[in-house]
Image (cartoon, rainbow over all chains, first blue to last red; front, side, top):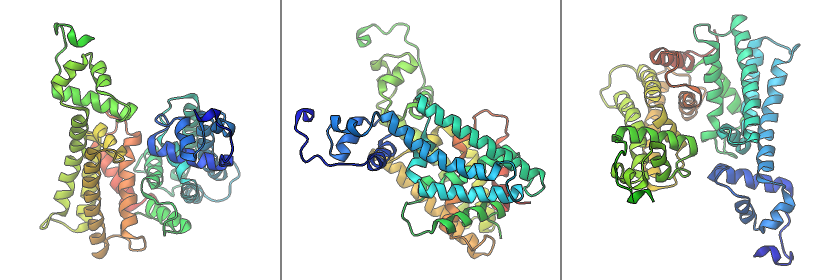
Length: 199
Length: 199
């Protein structure tokens, strides 16, 4: 219906706003459960007007997942590229803290990434990139075990999964714009993970 | 259609099998994205035959969430009921290990529980029970801080969230029937959490 109505008074949105609202909707009702019509309605746009802003729903998903993955990849790159400064232990601790930073700064996009199950090419591609980062992080954990700075009575793969399982759990309970300073949060997470809870 | 066909040759299923297959489907395609018809199809039953086994989809969800919550509640009860033996530290460590055990033994049901967002009375009820357990666990963490056995430079609420965030992350990567012995896994998780990763 609305498609035939003259476009007077239609609110203008930049791509960024459209993307933010789409990510919110994807997280709230699931990507598969969200239609382009839902995104249009959320923005008060007609379905034809929304296509003026975005080529497809999958394009929005792709942008959101890239946002999360690019931030994490940059942190992993800095920690694992040949010639990186510091011991493996220092680099691992640093990448944990940087990951917390990315997670807090891009929480909705990271939340979406962590829920991806591989139902489309875009999702499979994101899972592939995520696995690649996990593999590089597991390699860094092994390096830290080998240099003697991490406990060696727990398998490095398990260490890596528990460590980033703890980091990633933040998306379940951290409230964006909360009272905790992100740098303080990052330091607390790495203190708990590396030094342990026991006094 | 099928409803009018005589019921000859219809496979018989016990409630337990129906529940297992329903939980698998809920986890694979989401509770909201699963119809009673889907569950019937998965079992090779007609839609009328499935109602012979289960009163409603919500009833299956309720049973699944109770399964997960009852196991966790029993562990928390043992650790927090007045007169429990041992220091708060020992009881907390024990409840962490028992939680890993429940998670591994009831992984599909716990996975479902952790994804619940509160879209129905059954889900809201499960979220309420989960919050209650979280509150009691956070209380036990505070008790352990007060007795001087846990680090006090990180807020007890944050400690509690990171600790159980790590435990709960198991549902994301643990493969049921894998090579890791559940008791060994529980000990590794609590060693990493309480003693830390650093050597």
